Length: 525
Image (tube, rainbow, N blue to C red; front, side):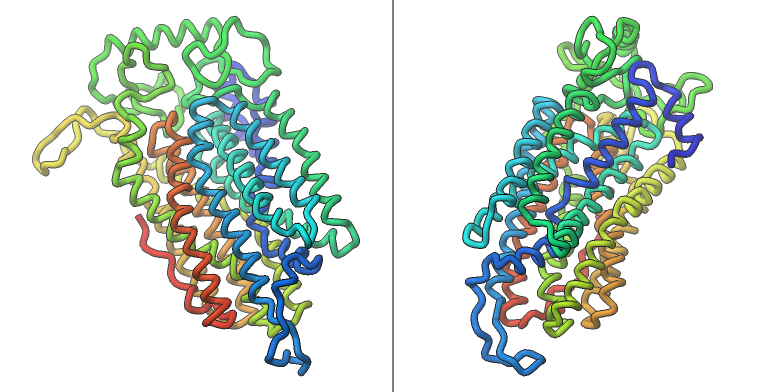
């Protein structure tokens, strides 16, 4: 339930699109992320169904060791490796393809990106629906298409946070938490399968839901991008009142004639001002409670679009140490989570000593905890937003350069990035501590302890992905968000490829015991 105070704050700057439309965009996006975007991460539940249907069953061989009931069983380690390979490739594509998709999003806008996402998602669900145990190889392209389509959908949804300035980080992390919770969809598939519903019928229903994605694209999303901060009288989608022109220099929607006059006036003011940096309070109109993430103003170069921050090219952001350490931090912790998900089914079989019913119970428990991702992620956004509200005023004019005693002008984007980095330290430290604790619990070879592991895993994962998106949104210029988010995920995908040899190590020499790969996740940024 949205508190009245939040509604009042959101309604304070509703010039174009009304509060009802913005809330409709917010809630429908939450449903979209929570029901579709990250379903591949419920892979453990789907594997249970696919094994029962006989996918890759030909890879099982008679076991020379008797099972606990003193009967000769089957050695299905090669089957587990094949399922792990499907997940490895799918999760790799989920990250690696985010960079080209981010370029598409930044270059061609929301509508083009979402149409690609819907096509991929529909194709993936149809491939699973028409796959059979004899055509199990269809799982490879199907999971990859579901992954890429899902990550592109959430990439276009995270800009919705720009509609609610003061709560931008909370909404971004909320969407990422919903992305985590969507992995529970495969639990629903598993439960419905156990009650007699066919896998084909369920995935055909998911394919039919693409019509809803299409309607949302047309009426509740912008044609290009939602700018930040919002211009006066900003509107978006095809459901709004007609405007005399599109864009008017602000990418992502319609600007009314009044808004265009204000923008022209601001451009003239920018050109007449000096390049000195001004504090947040100097820019804020009297009596107005502006958002804590108001970007620094700077002169607009001739021919530049008003939504772009001058002096901060994409290459400078991508080659910065700030971005490099952030990618390293993300890569190590993401690999830890992927290893846990990829080895969960064989790990549970190892700890349960082959008890099929017990493995099913723990698989259901893991999937149910994933639903809590949407509840855990906003805590990280709350930490980010509260910590930034407590910051002092930003420095004026100069910053210390490479020489300790020299004061040199610092470009606006770098200055803002450093200030936002300081505000994000608490969030990053909390995320690393959670991942470390989760790894410790995962290394304990006691089955009941895994309930605690499941809880810590979903909290840690929600903080990781929500914090990653929020950090990139606040520390770098908004016009590069799609590319930087995609590049970070693509680079981390290369590190995530290590999960397959680790899984092969668990299935082979370690005989299903993942203790030696349950290691701490690495240092904070």
